[in-house]
Amino acid sequence: MSIGSEFKEFIARGNVIDLAVGVIIGGAFGKIVSSLVDQVIMPPIGLVTGGIDFAQMKIVLKAADPAAKRTEVAIQYGAFLNTVIQFVIIGIVIFLLVKAINNLRRQEAAAPAATPPAPTKTEALLEDIRDAIRSRS
Image (cartoon, rainbow, N blue to C red; front, top):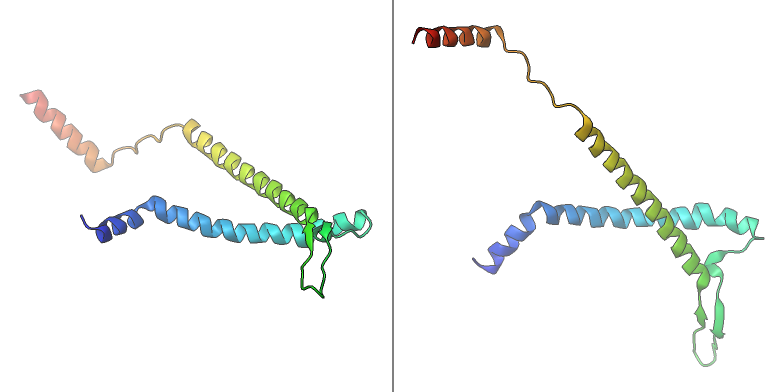
């Protein structure tokens, strides 16, 4: 088996396609959560805390020096707080999705098995004929 055909077989598996779709949707979901945190959740929190923009909060270790063309060296803990909040939101959403899926699976497992449909008139007649032939033998 050549490498090309092995690769085609690998890519054609459903799991790889599902993973690719999951990664793409996950990336888009991450952008939505980032927007939610940065543009919806953090502004009211900043307002309550006196107009503090968490994304700009930092501890400057070494100030920028434009004459020496050195950039600022800082610990940006505000951006870290935003990232932690995003992580918590993503965790809660994933937990709720998994919980909903598990509930659906439990309901499907608890549902009684579907009863087979009643035979049609033709099927019932054929069964009667079969039984009559068996009784003659």
